[in-house]
Length: 329
Ligand SMILES: [Zn+2]
Image (cartoon, rainbow, N blue to C red):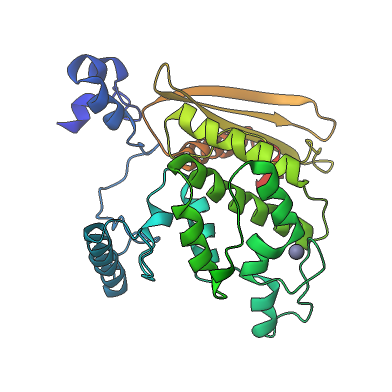
């Protein structure tokens, strides 16, 4: 019975028993299953939808994705100059975090909210690139034509060319780009594209963004951290342009939390610290969780511990932040 593998409180796995009973890989998988803090009835959850409920739409998209992945695999992964529009395996298969794949996919499909797209939808009127202010911000401009992008590529040591046969579509350029790079160069290129888009968003709201040199240094460190953690994950790195800790307003408690993974023990360390508006510590906790989780899950678990802690203390005005970055309030 599964409950035999739980501690007497039924709130935590019996780590010692599981490690004694199963091989390391199986133990890591079991310990990686999050447990609720309080008892609740089991229920069926659809893993493939955001709200956990199955719908015909969910099933349709799942079947479609399987169909195209199967076809793409039989065609050899979409390489060799394939002009196939879907499913873009060269974007989805590299080992980088999902958020990076999604950004590159949105770039390839011209679905990023570039100013050109927003002007087309009559949401804004200013079409000029927020970074260089010298051209309409299209998807092609964002990663090929913009001076900011060109400086980033020049500093990256990645062989970059505009390849005149871009034929106006950024996806054609991305495919050619990927085919001219080795696996790790392409992963780095994806991280650079994502990082450039982050900096563009920072500049777009009038804040100071990182320079191309910082973007490249961050991207290289990010790739190393992904490999070091052996996970398709977000490493505990400082983003370029990340702000220093800011105190909360008077009568408000700020709790900063974080999660870090130890490859030596295959466990996550969850921690948080609560401070007042003077920066004085009001309390902190650290907890070790065994198992392999996605970093976002581990961070969410750390946030949950922080919220429970605030509730225990009876604090009403609380800001909860992931490291120095505001997550929710
Ligand atoms: Zn530009």
